[in-house]
Image 1 (cartoon, rainbow, N blue to C red):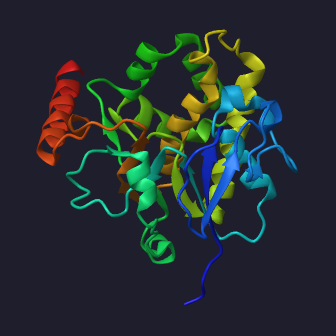
Image 2: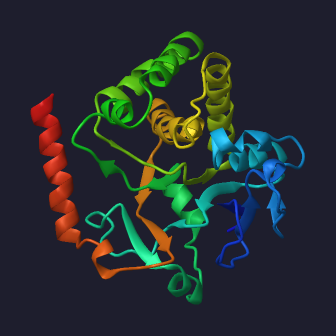
Length: 277
């Protein structure tokens, strides 16, 4: 079997302990607006949107990869504190995320499975979905700015109406979604998704008043997390869901719930969602 060129970006905005692997590509996000240049790829080379990092988050690395990587067949995005946990046992019942001390994680050899084989059976790898007691739309309205969400719906209706059904199914009729703007997929789907994603975000940018509050100013990162779910639904992609492992400087045992506790919590949220409808 032909060995494919694989690049899994690891996005970071600061000096961090990063795992080493030939398929991992560390990228400094927001390089153009940073006072410090890290010894890794920068997201301000070639065609880029590095200056938009305060609003686009890790999507500036996504855009950089889309426009500048060449001859890559499998591409993905991890974060300096978030990685796909392919070694997690009983993935179906495992929490969507678990935690580990940074130094403990870095001390272990970083291993990737045979992604080529996985992507022969699946179209894309996403983080395991998190289940909420309300719809994804309602959760956004609780946590973020309502006017921004209305603009998103208007943009999709006007510029991409063929995605409306998938949007309604994943955002308005569902209570679960994959988070973090993380994925691994073929360049074919990466390119197709990127064209649609940045078309939607650029149109939103023309219409929106970006909040002066730092957390809410990361709007396009938040929107991107939701849109990858819409994209996968629209194209009927076969998805492999994998839990995420998150690195912490200070780790405490109670951070990681048991599989049983997590499953019961997810079921509780699903029941609450059904009752509230």
